[in-house]
Length: 237
Image 1 (cartoon, one colour):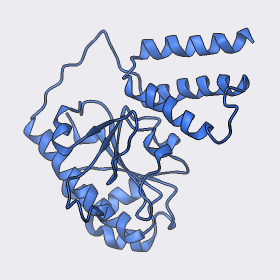
Image 2: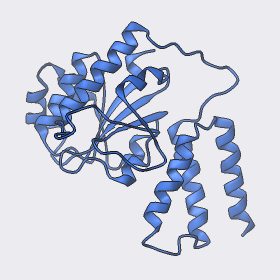
Image 3: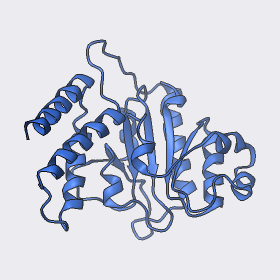
């Protein structure tokens, strides 16, 4: 296991101070990979760098994407953080369950904006949702505080070697990039046959489709087979 496999994604962060504080928190626990998606402030800026204190290198090396899907192209497992319980077909886990995550894979922790958190659509890209135990009457946590809690916990798992995983030479799990490409191919073919007849229901149907694909933990071979099936179905028309 390696800290280099862990990324922290800030989706539409609103405040420069929080972005800088997140970078600082990451460096406290020796994490280096920061990803920002469509940030409200100019990234990077002087306030972000000032707040990051000794973690300017993390800010300067951070990747900036315009949308969430593109930010996940090199990620294997996405864990979305949320203060609210989502009644969706995604496995909900707690901090203690992180010990069961295979950190030999490329894992990303996804955080929503300070104003509204993560939408159901954004959560649908995740393999798991994670809730930090808090006062039930006051669940709201500052963005950087949430990140620091998770970073400390994951760091303790990695450095204590609490979990061990054996790589299989026979089965290689598909990357998030491959699964996204397969899902998009399926969706395109469905759109071509006017499957999404109701515009109002289309967003939730897309969320449910992504939920199905992402929680299956498909292998690269299975993803290639399904992509071939979807491509063939498209040609048959």
